[in-house]
Length: 196
Image (cartoon, rainbow, N blue to C red; front, top):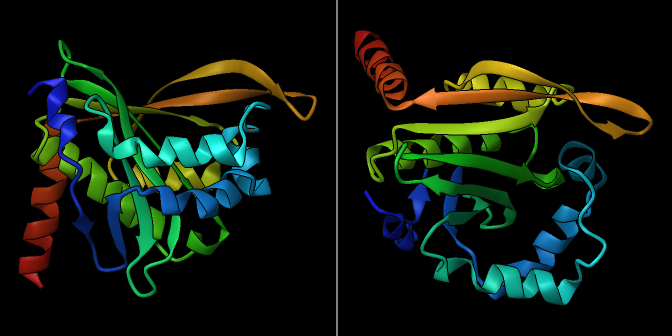
């Protein structure tokens, strides 16, 4: 695998979600999602220099990036963009990368985030040949921690008091998932569904 493997921008379809390449037309809804109070709480405030024009430029160029994979998370039933999933910070020597995601209010509480996470992680291991995918998440983001654990991620450590949020120092949880762990999880799901 090489970083150019990220050049292919697939469409990944699940029961509830479709992950697809971004277009410039997605920028308006992503601008709203990035500014959502809950997104800000769990991912941090957007940089002050971020403007609607910069957001439009960013999403318009995601499909041109050969070293990362940014996909829009859409609700399969409505086609509405509800967030994003990203594989980035590719390390060719370790065949690893970092995962991040965010969902706006219309994408929460319906299993869309869990499915979107599993779709892109599966793509990373099964199609891109990654060995490891890692992520960082604030320790107080209990919903995200549950989603990542359901997808197979394992807690590897805690970075204590990484930054102050609302006057309180917060911890960051480091999680990782290996290709063999993903394969075992998938095999268990298949054998479980055939046993029924």
